[in-house]
Amino acid sequence: MAEKLDFISIASSRQETLLHVLEVAKRLKKQRKETGQNDLLASGGGGKVLACIYEKPSLRTRVSFEMAMFQLGGNAIYISPNEIGLGTRESAPDVARVLSGMVDGIMARVFEHQKILELAEHALVPVINGLSDYSHPCQAMADIMTIEEHFGKLAGLTLAYIGDGNNVARSLMAACACFNMKFRMAAPPGYGLEKELPGLDFAITPEPRDALRNADVIYTDTWVSMGQEAEKEKRMAAFQPYQVNAELLKAASRHAVVMHCLPANRGLEITDEVIDGPRSVVFQEAENRLHFQKGLLAVLLCGA
Image (cartoon, rainbow, N blue to C red):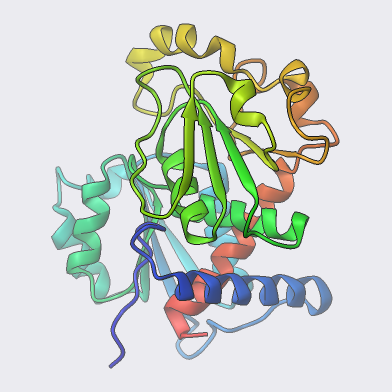
């Protein structure tokens, strides 16, 4: 039996695996647009089944994973926080062992990254990180897919991240290291990221305009993630100068595109004028959550 393959973070994934998943995702996206459904996961007994564990709600994660399974001929089971009580009512190792006997894969969207690690350690089926406080790899890889579609390449491009050094920023930093991109970050003191990866062309500054200089991609995210509500007032004050707006974009290259993983707090980290403007690829980026995850599921669940 082949060794099971999990998707926990970009930094822990092999570059050749990520490149292969991207190629499969691009092929399946093209196939879907041209010919419709591809039933890769429809083998035997009604098709492959993905258990989807949610501690945190999400529009894009739920719809993209469920539609990905449906379009590939499989099925997805939504498991709400109250049905498990992951780590309280039932331990992550026990959940992993039980689900391994019933489904073909597990996707979990959790608060603590440790729960993802425990699920992966004890599951006999592939485990996918749908989001944790440390990493959001599916989002970052959908972003990479979008950037490559737009520019026709990845190597040598510069991504400027404006805002909080959160799970999305960390995953994008890892993606830049993997695909030979430059990573620039503008954040208030105390909210940035440390350079964690060897070989990464990395710079951090408190001045957004410095980060935007020569950038190809301008990326932002919420200033207050789920679970940080107690810090909201402090964070709002710190991040006010980091809004991505029309005035800030004047400091960027004319060809630069704007990205946001959503949901967006319009009028805070980004303005309507920018997110709905001609330089925004935000909604193409959101759609690519579906297409990247189809590639990921095809590789993990049936060895495509």
